[in-house]
Length: 88
Picture 1 (cartoon, rainbow, N blue to C red):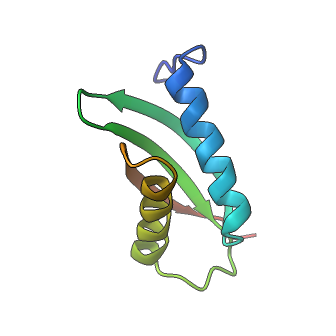
Picture 2: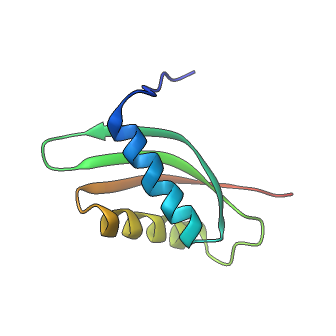
């Protein structure tokens, strides 16, 4: 089990951004394992997103959508996204 600092304000910010994106992109059923790696010039947001079983996008397209939306919402954010699938 990987430790996640639940009191880290950057993790809270990342989860807020991902929730906003989840509401904007109905193909995203959920997200989990949110981690943040912050550097001097950017913030990597690492997470898994769960694509709904009716998702019309490929994994790469969905990943790119999330990464673009993260960057739109905060130009310092870079998404490092893994796509999981919901099958039922």
